[in-house]
Length: 143
Image (cartoon, rainbow, N blue to C red; front, side, top):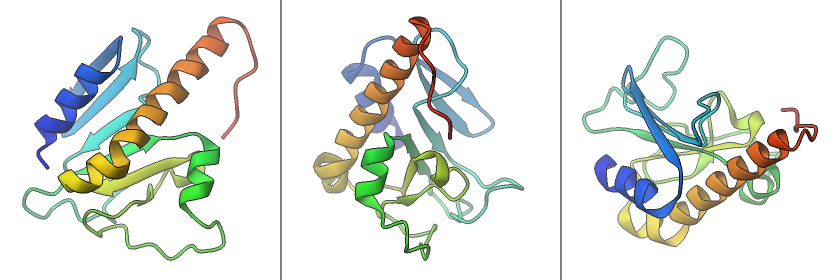
Protein backbone atom coordinates (compact mmCIF):
# COMPACT_ATOMS: atom_id res chain seq x y z
CA UNK A 1 0.00 0.00 0.00
CA UNK A 2 1.34 3.41 -0.94
CA UNK A 3 1.91 6.12 1.67
CA UNK A 4 -0.11 8.56 -0.45
CA UNK A 5 -3.14 6.25 -0.18
CA UNK A 6 -2.93 6.31 3.62
CA UNK A 7 -2.45 10.10 3.69
CA UNK A 8 -5.48 10.57 1.42
CA UNK A 9 -7.56 8.20 3.52
CA UNK A 10 -6.82 10.15 6.70
CA UNK A 11 -7.39 13.54 5.08
CA UNK A 12 -10.69 12.47 3.51
CA UNK A 13 -12.04 10.48 6.47
CA UNK A 14 -11.53 12.82 9.41
CA UNK A 15 -12.37 16.45 10.13
CA UNK A 16 -9.87 19.12 11.16
CA UNK A 17 -6.74 17.06 10.49
CA UNK A 18 -3.49 18.95 10.08
CA UNK A 19 -0.45 17.37 8.48
CA UNK A 20 3.18 18.25 9.09
CA UNK A 21 6.13 16.65 7.29
CA UNK A 22 9.60 16.82 8.80
CA UNK A 23 12.78 14.76 8.38
CA UNK A 24 11.11 11.77 6.73
CA UNK A 25 8.16 11.67 9.12
CA UNK A 26 4.58 12.74 8.46
CA UNK A 27 2.65 13.81 11.56
CA UNK A 28 -1.17 13.93 11.68
CA UNK A 29 -2.76 16.21 14.28
CA UNK A 30 -6.36 16.81 15.19
CA UNK A 31 -7.04 20.54 15.45
CA UNK A 32 -4.63 23.43 15.12
CA UNK A 33 -2.66 22.60 18.29
CA UNK A 34 0.26 20.53 17.12
CA UNK A 35 1.55 19.11 20.37
CA UNK A 36 0.99 15.35 19.96
CA UNK A 37 0.03 13.58 16.74
CA UNK A 38 -2.53 10.78 16.64
CA UNK A 39 -0.81 9.09 13.66
CA UNK A 40 2.68 9.24 12.19
CA UNK A 41 4.28 7.73 9.13
CA UNK A 42 8.05 7.23 9.45
CA UNK A 43 10.18 6.55 6.39
CA UNK A 44 13.66 6.24 7.81
CA UNK A 45 15.66 5.02 10.77
CA UNK A 46 17.31 7.40 13.18
CA UNK A 47 19.85 7.08 15.98
CA UNK A 48 17.10 6.34 18.55
CA UNK A 49 14.84 4.13 16.45
CA UNK A 50 16.22 1.60 13.99
CA UNK A 51 14.56 -1.63 15.12
CA UNK A 52 12.08 -1.56 12.24
CA UNK A 53 14.85 -1.51 9.62
CA UNK A 54 13.32 1.31 7.62
CA UNK A 55 16.55 1.46 5.64
CA UNK A 56 15.03 -1.19 3.32
CA UNK A 57 13.84 0.15 -0.04
CA UNK A 58 10.25 1.36 0.18
CA UNK A 59 9.87 0.54 3.87
CA UNK A 60 7.78 2.82 6.08
CA UNK A 61 6.11 2.42 9.46
CA UNK A 62 2.61 3.60 10.27
CA UNK A 63 2.22 4.45 13.98
CA UNK A 64 -1.13 4.92 15.74
CA UNK A 65 -1.90 6.26 19.22
CA UNK A 66 -4.83 4.02 20.19
CA UNK A 67 -6.80 3.87 23.46
CA UNK A 68 -5.25 1.71 26.20
CA UNK A 69 -8.15 -0.72 26.04
CA UNK A 70 -7.58 -1.31 22.34
CA UNK A 71 -3.86 -1.73 22.86
CA UNK A 72 -4.56 -4.29 25.59
CA UNK A 73 -6.81 -6.34 23.31
CA UNK A 74 -4.17 -6.39 20.57
CA UNK A 75 -1.17 -7.43 22.68
CA UNK A 76 -0.70 -9.71 25.64
CA UNK A 77 1.37 -7.69 28.11
CA UNK A 78 3.13 -10.87 29.22
CA UNK A 79 4.53 -11.44 25.72
CA UNK A 80 7.38 -9.03 25.06
CA UNK A 81 8.84 -10.82 22.04
CA UNK A 82 7.95 -8.80 18.94
CA UNK A 83 9.61 -8.57 15.56
CA UNK A 84 9.69 -4.80 15.06
CA UNK A 85 10.82 -5.28 11.46
CA UNK A 86 8.02 -7.61 10.30
CA UNK A 87 6.10 -6.42 7.25
CA UNK A 88 2.28 -6.12 7.42
CA UNK A 89 2.14 -7.18 11.09
CA UNK A 90 0.80 -5.14 14.01
CA UNK A 91 3.21 -4.71 16.92
CA UNK A 92 3.68 -2.28 19.82
CA UNK A 93 5.69 0.76 18.76
CA UNK A 94 9.37 -0.01 19.49
CA UNK A 95 9.74 3.09 21.69
CA UNK A 96 6.21 4.25 22.54
CA UNK A 97 4.38 0.96 22.99
CA UNK A 98 4.03 1.69 26.72
CA UNK A 99 2.04 4.78 25.73
CA UNK A 100 -0.39 2.60 23.70
CA UNK A 101 1.14 3.26 20.30
CA UNK A 102 0.69 0.53 17.69
CA UNK A 103 2.84 0.16 14.58
CA UNK A 104 2.75 -1.66 11.27
CA UNK A 105 5.33 -1.66 8.48
CA UNK A 106 3.97 -1.43 4.94
CA UNK A 107 0.41 -2.60 5.61
CA UNK A 108 -1.20 -4.50 2.76
CA UNK A 109 -4.42 -3.14 1.26
CA UNK A 110 -6.32 -6.12 2.69
CA UNK A 111 -4.93 -5.66 6.22
CA UNK A 112 -5.58 -1.92 5.98
CA UNK A 113 -9.22 -2.54 5.04
CA UNK A 114 -9.70 -5.30 7.65
CA UNK A 115 -8.09 -3.73 10.69
CA UNK A 116 -5.75 -0.78 10.23
CA UNK A 117 -8.29 1.76 8.98
CA UNK A 118 -10.45 1.05 12.06
CA UNK A 119 -7.40 1.55 14.30
CA UNK A 120 -6.72 4.89 12.60
CA UNK A 121 -10.32 5.88 13.35
CA UNK A 122 -9.82 4.87 17.00
CA UNK A 123 -6.59 6.87 17.19
CA UNK A 124 -8.38 9.92 15.76
CA UNK A 125 -11.37 9.59 18.12
CA UNK A 126 -9.02 9.03 21.06
CA UNK A 127 -7.21 12.27 20.24
CA UNK A 128 -10.46 14.18 19.75
CA UNK A 129 -11.67 12.99 23.20
CA UNK A 130 -8.38 13.97 24.85
CA UNK A 131 -8.46 17.45 23.35
CA UNK A 132 -12.12 17.93 24.26
CA UNK A 133 -11.41 16.91 27.87
CA UNK A 134 -8.42 19.25 27.96
CA UNK A 135 -10.54 22.12 26.63
CA UNK A 136 -13.12 21.38 29.34
CA UNK A 137 -10.40 21.47 32.02
CA UNK A 138 -10.57 17.76 32.85
CA UNK A 139 -7.52 15.86 34.10
CA UNK A 140 -5.61 14.10 31.32
CA UNK A 141 -4.44 10.48 31.37
CA UNK A 142 -0.83 9.88 32.25
CA UNK A 143 1.32 7.49 30.24
